[in-house]
Amino acid sequence: MAHFHEFVATRIGVEAYIEPPTAHDPHTVVLVARSGEWTRRRVPDVRSARALAAELGIPIYDVHLTGYPASMRRWSSANRRR
Image 1 (tube, rainbow, N blue to C red):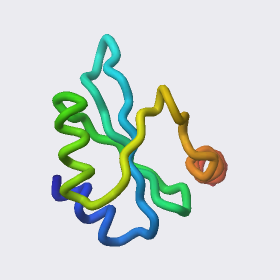
Image 2 (spheres, rainbow, N blue to C red; image 1 turned 60 degrees about the horizontal axis):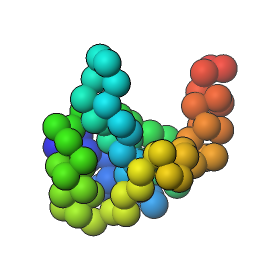
Image 3 (cartoon, one colour; image 1 turned 135 degrees about the vertical axis):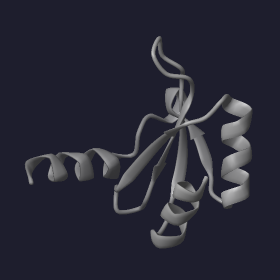
Image 4 (cartoon, helix red, strand yellow; image 1 turned 180 degrees about the vertical axis):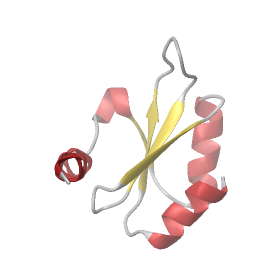
């Protein structure tokens, strides 16, 4: 939680994206800033993810419905090259 609070407090336009569970990980939440910078952490379930977003005061989306923002892909691509 402290990591998410710090991320939201130090970046502009942060949104949350719920990712479905995989064989190796439970649900995860990706926070994406307007710049495209992002961070990912595990959450127990979708309900917890929604509660987290409400506590942080940010919108939350389901990746299956919205996909990832283009800014996230651009940021990841640019930072891979460095």
